[in-house]
Image 1 (cartoon, rainbow, N blue to C red):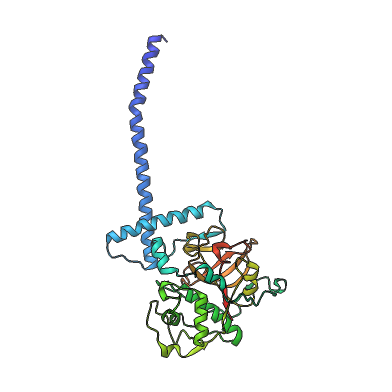
Image 2: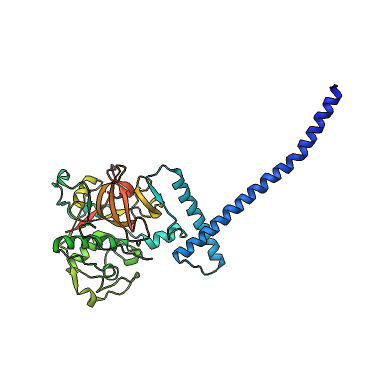
Amino acid sequence: MSVSRFVLTVLVVASVCTAAAPRALAVRELAGEEESAAVAAAMVSRHEKWMAEHGRTYTDEAEKARRLEIFRANAEFIDSFNDAGKHSHRLATNRFADLTDEEFRAARTGFRPRPAPAAAAGSGGRFRYENFSLADAAQSVDWRAMGAVTGVKDQGECGCCWAFSAVAAVEGLNKIRTGRLVSLSEQELVDCDVNGEDQGCEGGLMDDAFQFIERRGGLASESGYPYQGDDGSCRSSAAAARAASIRGHEDVPRNNEAALAAAVANQPVSVAINGEDYAFRFYDSGVLGGECGTDLNHAITAVGYGTAADGSKYWLMKNSWGTSWGEGGYVRIRRGVRGEGVCGLAKLPSYPV
C-alpha cells in the first residue's frame, strides 16, 4: 500500500470513529438514565409495599414525596449494611423507615440521664450481688422461660421508654418474689411521676421511677390503669389499687458486664442504651455487635443472656417497640465487651429491690 493510500485509510477510519463516538456516548447515557429510572421505580414500588404493610398514609402527594426520600435514604443504608456481609446482625426497613432522626428520637426514645454528679451518687453504692459467683450461675438465663416476663409492649409515639424499662424490671421481681406475673401500669408513671426528672412522654429515667414506686407504696396493674400513650392527669383512684411494690433500687457498678451478669442471673435489670443509632433502630435479627454509639437516650430491660450457635455471647433485651421490631420485640446484643458495652449498655444499669 502506498503512503498516500495508507494516510487516506487512517483518515477515513478516524472520521468514522469520530462520528460514532458521540452516538456510543449517547447510548451509554441513555442506558444509564434507563437504569436510574428503573432503580427509582423499584424504590417507589418498595415504598408502596412498605406503606401497605405498615398501614401508613400521608396527608397529600407532597408529604408522600418527602417521606419517600427519607425512606429511600434509610433503605439504601440498610441495604448497604446487609450487603456488606461483615456484620453479626441484620437490619430491616421496619415501621420507622420513613421517619427523620429527630422524629424518631422524640417519639421512640426518652431516657434522660441525670447530670454526672447526681448520677454518680446512685443508691449509695450498695450492690447486693457483688459476692455472687458467676461460676455457679447457669451458662444461659432467660427470664421469659421462667415466667417472669410479660408480653412485649409498645410505647407508641410517647418518649416514655424509661417507664416501660422500669415496669418490666418490677414485673420480673414481683414474679420472683410472689410467684405471680402481673402486667403493671406504665401509664401511672407517665401521669403521676412528674415532680422530678421524670416527665412522662418527654422523657425520664428508671432510678427515679423506682423511687416513685417505693414512695407511693407500689404500682397499679395494667388492667387497672391502662396505657394511653400520652401524657394525662394522675388518676389517684386507679393508682390507689397497688398490684406490686418494691423497697427501693440499686445501681449495677458502671462499665462492668460481669456485675451486670450477676444481677441478670438473679432478676431482670433496667438498662440504658443508645437506641437512636441506626444499628439499633433498624435491628432485625442476629447478635448486635459494635456498630453502635454509647450516648444514652433509650431504655430497655435485660431479661437474660446466652451464647449463639456461632459462639457469640449475647445479652437478651426486651424492648418497648412492639413485636414487629427485632426478634419478636427482643434484641440480642453482644456480651463481654470491655468498657461501656455495646450501645453503652453497661453504663447505667439498675434494678428494683
